[in-house]
Image (cartoon, rainbow, N blue to C red):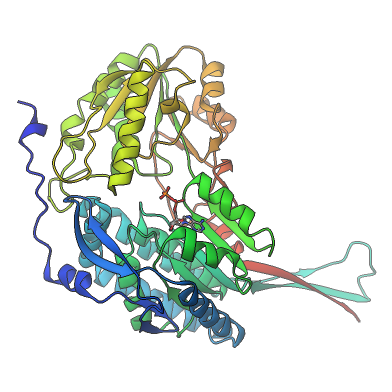
Length: 503
Ligand code: ADP
């Protein structure tokens, strides 16, 4: 019997710490305090493993947003954070990273309850990743410097010129629901290192860990008003943050559609902006690969986090000499990736985040079937109350199909054969997106040649979705604007001021 049919997808009992977090009254973290919303509206929090409402969060009003922006503005303008000695800021940030690690188990569980991702995955990836972003950027706090510059057209003995690196100001940071804590920390860390203040809005579907993060931010000693965390909808609270005249910079991670809207919305006030958007990342499998290693690797590239990953390897191009073996090897991972409740210790893949996302992904699968794609694996859900979709492999696809062109954001890969290397690079680049790509081969020269030709912000060789806080991350084409992480990620929160003096 297929193992899938015997899985009990009943969600497990929550821990006492998780119950406490779910039971707190809906509030916002503004100016170092927990405050009620001016409007009193709330949003239900659902556990996607069961479909049950388990908590409520605030739906921030315009007034709430204005209050948070005012707090961040004052905290920036009076210099309570940016003028603090970098060694002190670094220490506080490292304390925050320590606190995240100390609360790792609770944070992983809350992420599992909120997003539907397996607690084991959240504990192995999301929580340590969040702490690493804070720690890496803490180190930068004391290493941000301008330079002295010798003028080119002016006499050097008469002129003295230097640059100052200054924090860009008040930031509006908006994050999505696939890696809530990780994204929250990825956003606040460089802002804090640079000396900025911020208003962070997690996604309305997944705000639990950001709210717990606010407790830890207070405990770590980050001064009031430096980080403000508000919950609410994107088209209301998010929109107001983006358009607010007292905000200097917008940092957004989410869909390309909303990214474009936000890009238009910052135009009137010409804010600084970084956008991390969608993808439809190609994975090229060369004829020389060891299939036994590659098949599980390319499966993980798409099925990790139920495919709800901006860099998911959702378009597989395998050389015709290994295609059948590779897809068969992927199909053999079906039991490993079989969706389970997020608190099931055996889970490697959970449900999708929401009913809406479930409908969207099933809609794409159905469209693929209608367009003539063959279902090699999955193509359905196991049923039950949660928002589960089975890991799915579609073959017999062509470049016109929506399943090949559009970002599905679910555990669905379209597998295609290729013969010619130039042809496959052309096909891989035939997309509006340019976030990431993968190449699997033992031929190091081929790997570098292909990497240079792929139009993507990140190219992985013999691995996928290996993201590190020290390595720049961002998109080509419609996958984004600017870079996060690494030195460039810090630069994105800095202004450069040139000072030129006649001696
Ligand atoms: P997804 O498609 O992954 O749900 P979205 O791009 O819709 O991603 O949302 C990502 C984040 O952007 C969420 O925090 C959401 O609330 C916010 N958001 C959505 N619409 C807007 C908007 N018009 N302005 C600002 N933020 C928005």
